[in-house]
Length: 273
Image (cartoon, rainbow, N blue to C red; front, side):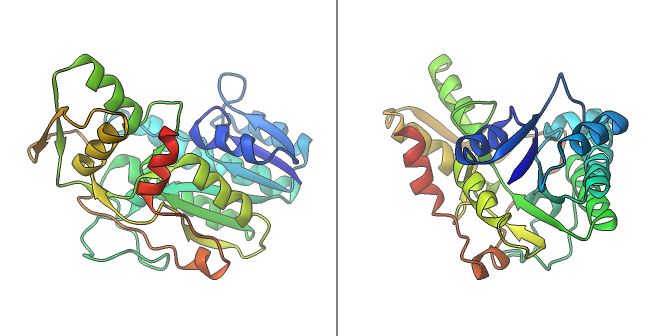
């Protein structure tokens, strides 16, 4: 297959390259390629004439989006529109990577792919706007919502916990934010399987199960050989963006195709191996 990957230098983009070794890839990322530049991104993708575009590029600084809403919508909404229009121009299918934050976390049980979103933050609103841009412009699309992505490289929760634990005598982590840590190589494998099915629509791909940020950090420290490190629970953390307190997204549609992800604790063990 001919596959274009936006955000190719990011966690998911890097993991996809490690899996899609037999495919013909076009790698798209800053500074050479800017998804907010409509003409450039249209011509860049159309010239390559891909079978599918995996769109992982985004502005993912959740608090930063509150401070720079125009940038959030430019990257996450109009950027997704630009990639969708490029797909339209060369008749390519599109995978749009989105987020569990499109939900408010008030349901009290796992969210299905069919549940109505209710985003709380500018980041989540801009990502949902991107989803709707793709849906309005294309017939052949996959929207893949994921959560709490991490990998060996990049700025993510796991690497941050390890770095701070080396710098400080103790850490405070919230117990009232619950989600599903997702290992980028596992997500990449799921996406690589998905694009071989012409079953277009919305998918929820995370590693199975949930934990709080505190529980996640505790497991990270234990696996890193720091079981006695002083980690303290916190419920008073203040941030600019309002994020859902508890979100679990259910993989219903992907499972019908035989695409599932393992439990988050198993994936985290592999991270340390």
